[in-house]
Image 1 (cartoon, protein in one colour):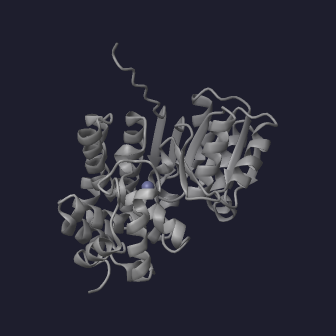
Image 2 (cartoon, protein in one colour):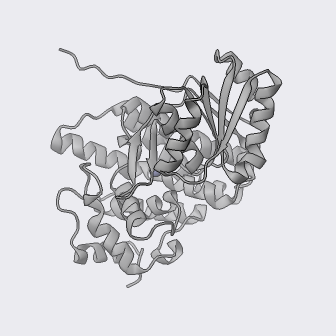
Image 3 (cartoon, rainbow, N blue to C red):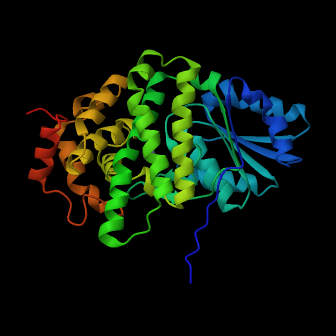
Length: 352
Ligand SMILES: [Zn+2]
């Protein structure tokens, strides 16, 4: 019997200046009629959330709002209680935390979700996956693909530049994620989608090829659009694959390991970028090209630039394979501390 592959894709992706003030009309076009719940962060409510609410109220939506403080289970449960009071649509306006909490709460309550990012910092903007902090290792959980993504380039261009730089690291990570995926396919017979892998690889290539321009023109809306489109396309590649495989491999395992042993030290995409340099070396690929692109963009390429002690890099490399059951270049026994140190030194992530 032929294998069935199901893809859940966003219905509308709108990227442009001032699009936040069109949210009300966009929601009407999508067929929503009355009760909407808007989640935002403390600061993002002021710079973006309130504009979204004004736009919704202007076209007669009844809007309830809630501030998300952390991406943890407590916030998700509080969000679900709010949803149960009777809404037909959830909108998350903010950064990673807000998007993750509102996306998961909406999925748990089987309510459609619209993603309105205020920074181009990670590829969860368009994917069906979320990362929620619990007691154990940080987990990536399946939620639901947003029905729409509305990205206002004016708001995102005014976000702190290190957020977009981190987003570039998250996209560059696709370069090793697709190699790990192909590796798992060849060695373990895992499903591999050539189209999703090619799309994901292309996103990384565009960021790598435009590294200099991104750095020099990072405040320009055109640059923001390039990075946003790469992040959204990465999310779509995951939707097509039906898993995070195209955008999350051994470099993400390294980043998750750092989250565990050095929480809140650096941003997700910054850690993934450094992980990509080292994992590309293990894959026998052009790791110097990855490092140079990250450097040109202004992203960290060393332990020092991540604000981490060398020993934490070695520890994270040694435990990365235990983070989750995903076959990568680190499988099945991972790196010994000696091999980890050698890898970090050869790639100049830590000093000789
Ligand atoms: Zn990521």
